Length: 461
Image 1: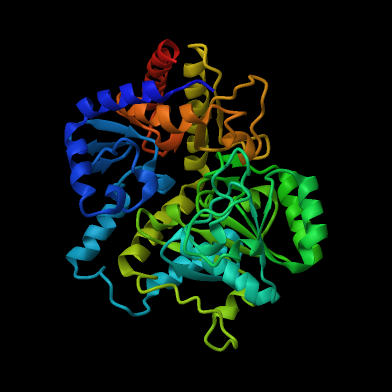
Image 2: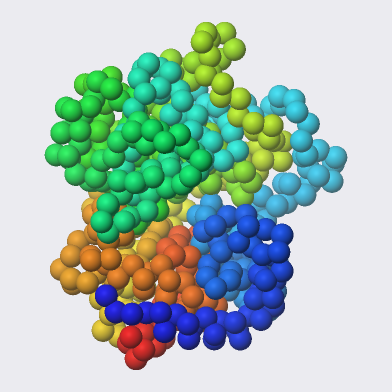
């Protein structure tokens, strides 16, 4: 692995000159906020662009730059930033004196829940406000339903900042993913969390044979996000469903990212696999904080008032918030009504982005590949750039994507985001998603920025 520190320092100096007002705001923010922000992934070193406007495919920062954005609100903005469809509905509601917190049940919650059930084939839904809460409640429900304690997840999978998600997220060259991610949890808590290797059917068979009778649930993303935007194989998800049935384990699909991105519903149905619970978020909120757990009546009713003992899945003060429900209903109606045309368009834009960005680096002699799709799930609008050390290497699991011995992770996670910001292109940690607000022109321009950065990398490293 080549030493990239001098090159990163050079890029940081250039970026500070490029965005002096953002640099100054970052220094100010650090006086009152932890690390200068409230979400660590947004705090791109040496400092993030500070945004004062966002529309469609672009964001505008305080330094006057119009930045083509592929981060798109943590991949939530499938129509781009602030789509008029949603903002107009919210503006009208606010002008009529409705939309802020009221603390009562109202009709829009029912309509949103009915649509989520219909589009996922589930029987019950409970709403909450974040993906972390949704996965947390889903695991609680599974543990209560089975009377078991142990949780199986994917090494490299991210299920939010909740206890059963805080193990095996970041790769360590000596430990792999077998370590905890933070302080403040009980010392023995990690022992309740087992890990499987993504897309490794034999390992999954072995794990269930050894521990299946103790497992409450197996939680996984059909398209693993933080682990490298790698879709599952059909065989892997079908194996997971068969083993979960065999051992009485609750199968949870975390579709916070993938839900409503590949179709107007869950992605599990594209594999022909139905989980027992599915968590949804991001896109379903229309840019507002909405998440949900959907599943069978038998499991979700453990949170009902009549259940005893009861799972305290309250959802939170802002669950079912009126403005959030209006945004969700508006977005979901649009996606369902236009499913036949908008998802093929997204898939084509995604294919073009993956091909163009990888080709831009390869044209300058840097081995690059983009994950985000596979033969079992081709219609993807997601991507992340990887730089395999061996040109013949295949990236099929988070161990491949995150191991510095397999891929040059420094280029992906450090050089790429900072270098592209100098060309007013935003790919946080080398990953992104196209929205319907992006066009072929913007994708090709971003590919040009990739090629320019590749030239600079080739000369400097």
